[in-house]
Image (tube, rainbow, N blue to C red; front, side, top):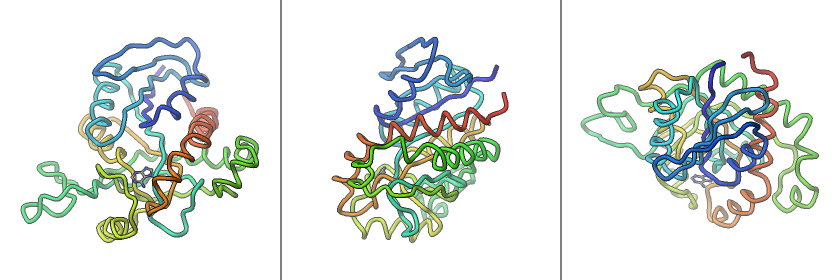
Length: 253
Ligand code: ADE
């Protein structure tokens, strides 16, 4: 059976998935714990990458090189960059951009020097699996997965699922001005986060299919430092394991 690697930046998301796994074994490498086992019938290895592009790249490299994962999924939260995309919605990435990579005028803005790419594509099959899982989760589970009070307090009404571009950079965005700057560089970005495109680059260089799913935790504005931790505690773990359960239920193995 093939092995799926899963990464999340936050303890809450990874812990909720590990909790659902069977026959777990753990190994610590490079200050992170890699947990292998069975997740809803799929062989997986999961790790908490921690935040940022370097941490995510190290984690992804170990999943590929040390644990021989055949494909990778990054699950996490993100700040919205699009007024249609609201807190509680889910975004499945189509293209990933490193919005803070700029070696101009030697290379085009965001071009990864000597790789000849300004964006990384996610894998069509994995993307379809996540979209299917996210839609099933939203349709059947989301309303009962969260208690009514959390839903009202966090403003998570009827979650929707989007497919589109994601901007990645080593920056937690908490200002409209900064968000607008990123949007100017990546006009079609639906949200911003800190790991996706770096995992995309590692996977591209190793020829390993990958995909990213993000739940919107904040609007990448002045409210982000408050909204983000509240959301993380109440929602992120519930969504992460709920979507994976639905996604893996429909997956061909
Ligand atoms: N992940 C979640 N919210 C974010 C934000 N506002 N900026 C960057 N990464 C995030």
